[in-house]
Image 1 (spheres, rainbow, N blue to C red):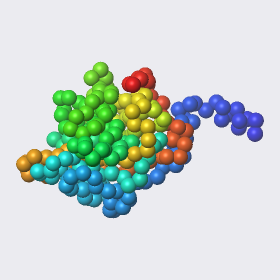
Image 2: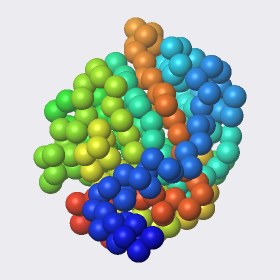
Image 3: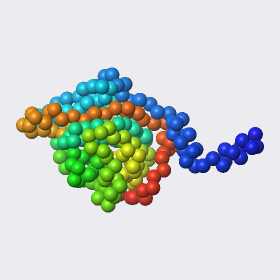
Image 4: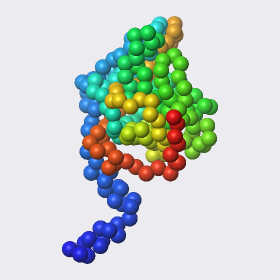
Length: 236
């Protein structure tokens, strides 16, 4: 018994972390068959289930953005999912998102991980405060070349988002893109996928983004938080 204890203490940190990750209490929040547990908020963007993925499309002549959101709200969590999109499609992942005031031009506010259509800007994986037709960067990737190149165009990309207390960590394809503290959105909110409003451009309705393998940890997520080599940045 003593020898076993010494062996356990001698295990490298990375191995202990890997064991904790493998034992993590993941819960699927998309069944791969239909939109049970999900809802559509906002305009008339089209949301389908195709090939075990949530597939979203913009719709021409829509006055406001559309969101495919969870019906359940989440406060502290670790979220993982895979996303693939047509290169021009402009989308994002919202969390701690909530209904905007009636006077607002959109239906949801919240934190927003950008999924960027521009290969020049390379914004995918950055974080901004989404409050409608106007928005503000909380953490962009302009000074991090590694993060700028984490996204792979026209391929499945893996996202991991940790929202624990006031600390946010993000990885794209296991490359860290965000590590910050922010206090603006403190309450539980929806997880949502964004479809931008679209003018009289019916040709763009064929563009799509897909999301699959959507899973979450809500029970003691701090136990399963991953280390990152990005320095924690206060953003308040």
